[in-house]
Image (cartoon, rainbow, N blue to C red; front, side, top):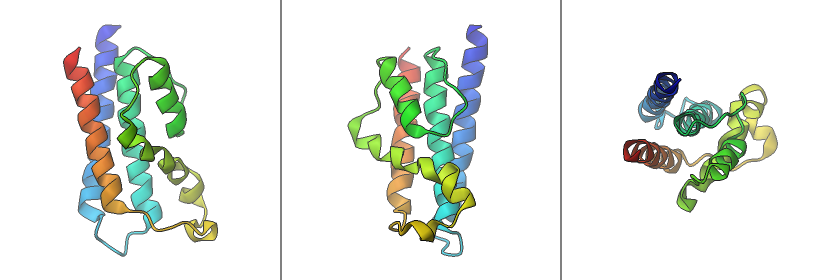
Length: 133
């Protein structure tokens, strides 16, 4: 079972890095909407949190809810640093704003560069936790 967890963790991190790569390459392209950038940001965060949960042997349901995944990590005594908690606001990009018009919600523009930096910091945090065990 341990090999399966390690494999799942590794795959999730690799997939998160693919979303991060998409962000790095499209972040300054104004033809790409905030909904699309936000979707890839949310996906990267979701996969990184699931990778850490998987590594810790924690079960999680199929969800796009970042807060639920953060709560799962907190329950496992592996809280994400407070300076990364803004990632919880990405949840709507997974579903609601993926299929509805973002502008209807009168939301401020996504701070693309800040979100990318949060994702990079989260990945470093996850990789550090995994390397420490």
